[in-house]
Amino acid sequence: MPRTIATTTSVDRDELLAFVRPRHQHILMTTRHDGSVQASPVSAGVDPQGRVVIASYPERAKSRNARRTGTASVLVLSAEFNGAWVQIDGDAEVLDVPEAIEPLVDYFRSISGEHSDWDEYRRAMVDQGKCLIRITPTRWSPIATGGFPPRLATDG
Image (cartoon, rainbow, N blue to C red; front, top):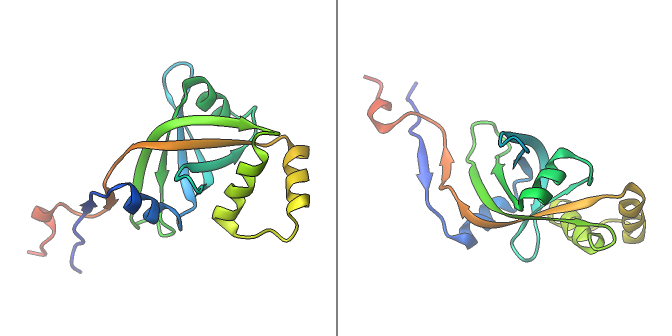
């Protein structure tokens, strides 16, 4: 069986966002007080301003860390484990209700489209005390796929 060659494709911001928009499985990475990495699997979207958006709760470690440091990274995964991926680093902000309500609507739309009852959704976000983490990309890796280096990709 032929070996697959690993790839990296450098992209501009528009190409990055086009890659990220249909991919909602991310690993959010924030920094703990002791400097170590805290990683969380999350569902994420891209808002109309091109920020990665993640719904959470204010008391969760990811929210506290992002609020404290003002930075976060996400590893954007494809549906297949061996599919293409990209890491995005950026400035993070955490919005609480009531300021988070309309951005949470944008978050939902970016992942699932239209809700059957937006008033009900807004009430649920308030009742649950949700927050929204927004990450403005400041740098990103090339879009990558796994595999072998070219020197090892031949069968012989």
